[in-house]
Length: 301
Image: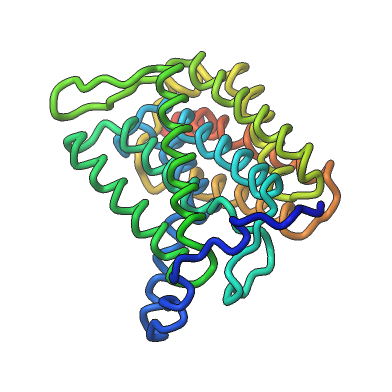
């Protein structure tokens, strides 16, 4: 897709020179910190939160809603990247599109959403911690030279807008004292957000039909919507204790599922297998609390 030159194409404000002047050790540190916004790491985090739910301080509906936010972010950022068609800074080792920043948008949607949905610590502390992570991830993208400042500012702004719309039209946000979740999505809220994520993904494919991450996101959103609607209520009420056995079954199931999803997206170019892998993977992830709960009963845990 060819895009005409725009003023945003050279949108730097001196940050490239700053990034080039940084000591190697600083770049290395921020290169590690930037993974706090890596989409696969965020998927792992939300999958663990979904599996163990209240044991780690979030309801299973809340974790499902966080997954929906992440899937919305994937469709939004990849679609917008191809709509704008703006390059990364000249010092970036990557030659793909740069505006808006996916790490900034995704970390804002995920960490900001978790701060609202979690049920541990005081809510002001949760929001402050989420804001700190978002700032670190956004700054890291600029300092390692893969984004302009405008890219991360736009990513954060779009992420905040996504959160405002998702919570505003869904469960809403209200402070119930100093602790506790600020929003408690229902089964229907989670299903609706999966449907929205599917819509964003399909819209993104209209401008970027061969994008493997989009294909995986579309399949994951479709599988999540079908699986959640079919057995989400049972999964939400499943009790999963933390023991050696449940950690083995749950950890093994998570690892196998996520490896199959990411491996298919990374290794194959065909659209259908990637979409199917995403859909099957999502169903497996949503089913896992039921499977682990059944295994615990069989083993007498």
